[in-house]
Every structure is written in structure tokens, then in C-alpha cells.
Image 1 (tube, helix red, strand yellow):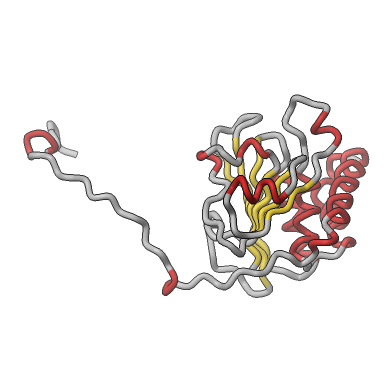
Image 2 (spheres, rainbow, N blue to C red):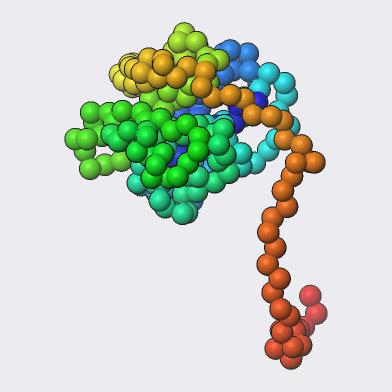
Length: 226
């Protein structure tokens, strides 16, 4: 199963990225889940979206805790603890960061053992103070990196997901998606499918024992029935 997370800020198109990628997987015959997860629902607030894709029925639910690919649309989120960009990553996780800096620079900065790649900053990103809309580009890059999605399937996914917004929106997003798809050609198939989740490999959370105060302090004060 492929497990992919998109991290960005509100207005950058991470929800759209997950929808496009999910549709592209579906066109290729995969079973798919895609969903966004919001914190504060406002422009500029951290948001992430995820996609699961498998040839067999998907039994997993909830957020992805062991991603195969993490895509970061806004590099300023990397050091933000609440964004949880690095949550659950392992040495086999591939990181793709939308950044003007080299992947090797990020790899050293993060002290990360796995592959770190960068998606070149779009021209509109450098010319605007607003969070850049890069959802389609992130979806296109992911489609190429998993090595399971054809260019035609990505095109169909963009048309299916964005067709209702009109020809101009489709043309702009399709150009972004295909440009990113082509730009990641050297890394096609770098993302490997993760193993199925099993109960035997489950790691219980770390519990913190909190001392119980004396009863007069911590006992509930019940003043009425129910």
C-alpha cells in the first residue's frame, strides 16, 4: 500500500492535491482513500491531507502515521512542531520539499537518513507574499515518484477533479501538474509501497504516570444526581 501525506498551509491546495492524486490512482485501478485534516480553518494555517492507495481493499482508517512519502508545500512548516511534518517518518520515507534549497541541504539540516528531494519553487511563489497555490504541482510530483501513475492518468485526474472550475483553471493546474510530473522523471519509482499494518508490530504509546492526589483534593464534588 502507498501511504502519502501532503503538508501545507490553508490556500495552497493540499486538499486538491490529495484529490487529484487519489483520482489518478483510481484511474490506474487502485483502491483509494483521500482526505484532508484541518486545524484552524483559515488561510495560512497548517493543514495536511493524505492518500492511501492499494490493489486490495483498504482496511486502515485515520491519519497516516508511517508515511512512504511526505510532501511539504511550504518549507516554513518544517520546524513548526504543530505541523508534525516529520511525524512517523523512517529511513525508508521519502521527503519532497517545495524549496529553492537543495535536498542535500535539507537532509543535513534535518539529520534525516532517508531520501530528501526538492520541488523547484514556482515562479509565482517567489513573486508573491501569499502562500503559493501548488496543489496540482505536488500531486504531479507524487504521481511520478510512486512510479505507478501514467501521464495520461494524471491528466484525466486533473480534468475529473477540476473540470467544474472552468477551462482556465483546468489549463493552469494541468500545466503545473504535468511540469512537476516531468521534473521528477529522474526519481520515478523512488517511493516504495509500505508493508501492511499488523497488530503484532503495533507500538503502544508512552504512558506518563501521574501521582494521585489525596482524596480531599482530587475527589469529585457531586452536588446533585446525574
